[in-house]
Each structure stands twice: as C-alpha cells, then as structure tokens.
Image (cartoon, rainbow, N blue to C red):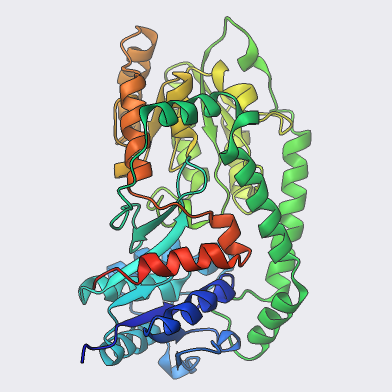
Length: 441
C-alpha cells in the first residue's frame, strides 16, 4: 500500500477560505492535510491544525541571526506597524518542530507574513517543496507556482502558444482598452476592496488581536493613525506644487520615470528586498540623476497605501529634480514621453519593452533578464546607461526578444483565472488541485 501524500498549508487570514477549498478537494483525492496556524482565530475546519501558542514574555529573544534580521526588513509588521522581531526565534523553533513531525511532501502558502517567511527558511534547509501561487505577469488567465519566496516558477504547464497569439498579447499592451490583463487588474482591485470591507473577516481579525495575536495584526490605534496619515499624504500629493507636466514637452531635460509600487505588498517587500524602502531608492536615484542634469518623475500607484509616507515627502522636498505626476494620468498616457523608466520589481518593464522605451530594473530576477532590460547594479552605472540612450546605443528589445519572454511566462504558468479562484469558483479550484496533487516532494 502506497504512503499517503501529505500537504501542509500555512494559515493566512486573507486567503484562508481559498486554501480551505483547495484542502477539501485534496482530501477527496486521498491526500492528508495539515496546517501551521499562527492566528488562532483562523483555524481550519478540515485537516489537522498545528496551532502555535502565542509566545510568553519569557519566550521573546532579542538576539537574532542575520537571516532573521533580513526577514524583519521584509515583515510588514516591523516595517509599518512598529513591531519588534523578538518573537522570531520562538516561532522558528515551533515551526521547525512541526515540519520535522509532519514531514510534508509539499507546503502550500504565501510569502508575505513573518510565519510564512520563517517556514520558507526551514523548508529550504529541510529540502521540502514550498509553493506560492500568484497570477502570472502580463498574461491574462494564467497563474504561476513560485518556489519559496522567489520569482522562480515551479514546473510549468509547458503549454504551447503560437507566435500569432504572443503577437496579439503584445499588441494588447499597446492598447490597454483591448487588454484583458488591465481589466483583470481592475477586477482584482474590486475583489481586494470587497475583502477589505468584509465585516465578518474584519471582526474576526479584531477579536484575534484581543486574544493575543499582535504579530501580524496591528492595534486599532496604529491602524487608524496609518489610515489617517495615508489619506492626508495622498491629498498632499494631489495638491503638491511639485506636480509637473514638463515631460510632455518635446525639448526638455532628460526625464526618468519611477512608477511607485504599492506597499505593503509581497511583490516589492519580499521580491524587491533589499531595495524595498522606496523613499531611500528614490533619494539615491534623484541625487545621482541631479549630477547628470536629469529629472526624476514619480508616478503614484493606483492602489497607493503606506509607501506614500512622511519620509517620501521629505525626500521629494529635499531634491529639486524630483517631480510628481498628476494622478489623473494613467501609465498609458505618460509612458511614451520618458527617456528612461526605472523600477524595482514592477511589471512596467514589459510595457516599456513593447513601447521601445529604455527600462532598467534594480533587482536581478530571471523574469527581468533579456535584451531591452538593463540591470542597474548600482547608481554609479547611471552615467553609462544615460550616455548610451542619448547616443542611441541602447539595445532595445526586438519582436523576437519579446516573443522569447512571453513564451517563457506562458510555458512556466498554467491556464487558471486567478481572480475567479479568489472568488471561490469551483472550476478554478479544481484545476489548481489537479495540478498541485502531481507535484513531487
């Protein structure tokens, strides 16, 4: 008799219901389900819960390894909610104990919250596969299973796509009105908004705080202060004297666009580390560009949150060459007017390649490698990059380069509508189950 396959889910208050739907279907496929539960209010109704008790004061430890110090710099609770990471060692010991006892074949979770990142740390050391599901970059109705906390895909469908269909995707980027991916982004915004207004979930989170969960759940006071601050700073952006439309002019100073990424968000907090403090990156970038007689324009993310901070406004005010873009403009309205686009992990990379605009990334991920994408290892490289652009020596992506990148994204992903999965559509849930059950440890 063959041994039952074991799946271990990591509790996540935002996607817990989706994970439970997957768990139910996996049980039907004769797979044993386990959970690591950090927030006691979100225990699962299916499978076996391994509940980690909230630490006592004597369990807290101020001495952290270098790796855990790095995790604290990715942890939204430490970055935005003024929490110390003294609980890491306690949770690390408990999570390692659960992994050694359960010996799962596969771990399924996100790479956002501190207990997920600590689980990933141990999964790597124990050679246990950790899957993180997310929508694919710039191809609609596709999802990717990423390895651990990286941007590296796991397996992939190896689905074939014709050059004609890839060309259609590329054309749609050039015309956002025809692109499903832009509509999917708007749909996701609506789903996130609906979830944020879900009273029963909010009440559950509030109760969990009262019961002792303070490591992923900020106090109401802190949350209220951040919300009020965010509203005020977003209003300040709207009314700022730094808003400029100079980039629309034909004869102008060399202009660089930096599209800001929403935070907290796994995409930049984890994948963008150690460049996830945007105000610091912007300050260094502006100072380097100033020496080259170049201007830096910031475009606010439509979902902007805590990245629009007091620190950011101090950077804006202290650099004369930083300007803001009026939030009424979409990316498609402004992108063609810039000489260079610089991003940390933004998918604006692919838009820039299609529009044939020089683009540079600060992070060096596999998805960002290819002709037409310049990796900015440090800001000392800016003079070379800008000089190449001015002298028309920049190597743009041609059609074959674009086809190669989009082919890779397509083949390393799967045909699943992520938004429908988030909305608990059974067909999408079943598709995911049929894929992950085949993953080997």
